Length: 221
Length: 199
Image (cartoon, rainbow over all chains, first blue to last red; front, side, top):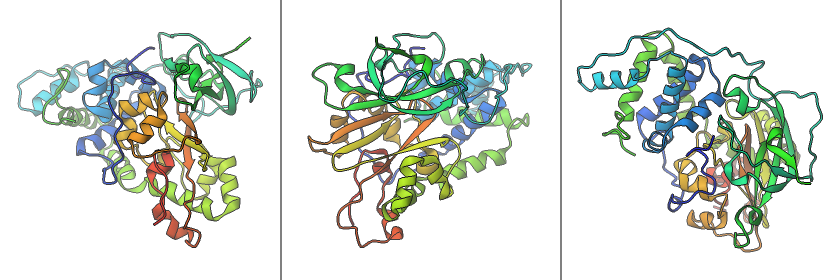
C-alpha cells in the first residue's frame, strides 16, 4: 500500500546526518526492550516478518515518526498483537497509564485469534520449479501498480524501465505472505535503473538497483 | 527523540514498552530471559567488528575474496557469522571508479550478522528518501566527496537480500597483517558512506 514507509525520493526531510563513532546500539534502555519485544511479538502473534512490515506500513505519520525507529517497531508490534487478539485494543495505553499513576480500568484479555498460518520452511528462501521469466541483461519494466495491501515495490520505480543485473534466490512473496494468503514463492531480480530514467534529465548520474519479485515486472515491448 | 512526553496522543514510549513487557510476561507469553538474550546479542555480540573481520580476510586472502564476491552468504558463514537478517548476503566491491552504497527506502533493512543493528543515520528519513535521488549530494553531506569519474551504484534493499560493501583497501596498508587491518575497517565504509583510511 502507498504509505509513509515508502520514502524513496520523497522530499522535505532535511539534510543527511554524518555518522558518529560513539553512537550506542540503543540510545535509551526502552529501545532495546522494544526491539526484543517486537521480534518476539511476531512469534507470539502467530504471524510473520512480512505482516510486521505491513504493520509498519499501516502506521500513521505520528506513529511512524514521532518516537523514531524503535517507537515504530513498538507500534507495529502492538498492531500485530491486537490483530491476533493477544491484546485488546488500548491495553498497552491503559497499562502505561496505570504505571504512571493514573487510575484507569484495563480492558479484559480477549480470546486469542491467531491467523491460519504456518510457514512451509524457515526463513524466506524457497525453490521455484519454473525457470525465471527474465534473464540477466534483459530490459524490464516495473509495473505501474498501487496494491491496496502489503508490497515491496517502491513507488519511485513504478512504471520505469531497467535492466536485470542479477537473479537472486527465489523467495516468499511478501505481498501475499503478509496477509497469510500463501507464500507464493517467486524469482527475485536485482534490477538496475538509471537515474535519468527515474528522475529526469537533470538528475545526478548514478544507478540504483532494486530487488523485484517476478510479479512486479513486465517486459518492455 | 523524546522519552519524557508522549507524541501523537500516545503515552511515552518507555512507559508503553514497560506496559507491553508486563502484559506479555504476566501471561507467560514471553520469557524475560529470551528477551534479555536478544538485547545482549545485539548490544554486545553482533556488530560491525564481524564485517571488519570479513573485509580484512578478503583483503589479505585472494581466494577468500573471490569466494566472498561469488557467494557472500557462504563465505561470511566460514567466519562464523549468520543469523537473522542474513539469509542471503551479496557482497559488492568498491574500487577507484565504482562506488556502491546501501540503503533501504521501505524500512531499514540491514545485514545484521555482519554489521549489527543499523545506526541512526541509516534509519533517518533524509537518508532513506534522498540516497536514491541524489546520492552524490547526500554522500557529500555525510563527509564523503567522490570524484566526478566515480560511478555510484545505490543498492536499495527491498527484499530479504542484504548487501555488504567490500571497501577499497587504502594505499599505505600493504605491510599490515589481517589482524592489524581489522580495526581500520569502519561500519560506514561497509555501507558505502565512507572510505577506509590508512592509519
